Length: 425
Image (cartoon, rainbow, N blue to C red; front, side, top):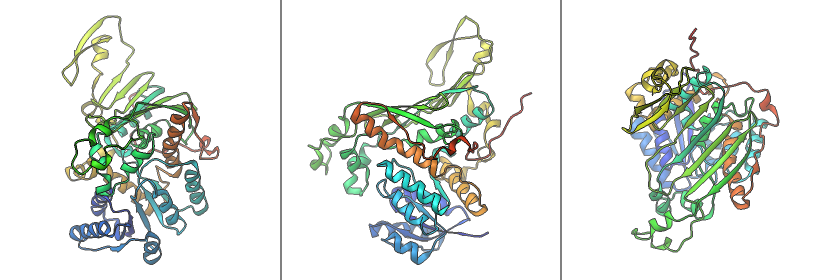
């Protein structure tokens, strides 16, 4: 097998997680790692040497690394502020790009990323790993099979208490702290929005039209740092980032999307992914599917939900029987890779979805296939960040650009993997 000579741009925590998946895939040969902080690059090189027996070259300048090593692809896991610029530098040199997620800072960088891609035609994939997750792919497959009818509403959240990661950012050299001090926006929209956009065929027959955002105050981080050792210098800082940011997005084909940034209040992790259609729904928190089988009556019945609570739902028991755990009852709708998943893969980054993401990227790169999460997806999803910042400042809705220059009308649906079409007739 031809090896993809790979370099890493950025050697922080995410690079280590990504690297551990890449190490297990034979298609990749990591030849270089780069970070402005040399000790971080050395640590990642040490990790590769320990796990693979081969030590990648260490750099602090990505341009020098590109020009000396001439790699086949760059995995860009640098901070939000520079990952677009590094990706552009790679594409201009004909180096394929796999770019990590994060919000965009302005419209210019989004259009520049698209312009350079269209000029160079260098392969580019946006690393939104949640698009490869079992739950999101099951929901997508059920949608493609018509189980939920016409999809009208989707929602999700980045619900993750990361106060410690943010607050200690100066000590760990992490970029989130300076963003939370200086900006107020939906700064991390793609984990929930990416799978929703794929389901709704955004950039492929449909597009985002406009959004409006609303935010709470900012209090939780301020309280968090008051009694933490080593954070005394933050006691009087006024964090601009709101504790909660809610955003509503309208789509050209009539769907409504709501997403929420929820990272500084105490909570358990959840993406709260939900898909609602005219015939049913998917609800991620309990991995539940509801199918309307048209046999509902006016009678009321109680049922016990997986969390032990008792609820009431209109409908007869024939309808209620279809309100079931999707993992146990809908496995036939899962793509083959998740039906045949091994424990070894599940132990890879983020429960296996990182592994599948890089398997797909390698397959597309080696075989000349179209990238399933492409540059147009990247900018459409990343643009939500600077647009929500604008909406929060003005209190008004804002239009969302069409980065495809009208071509979205002609582009065909492309899922991240082949999904099973089940013939029930």
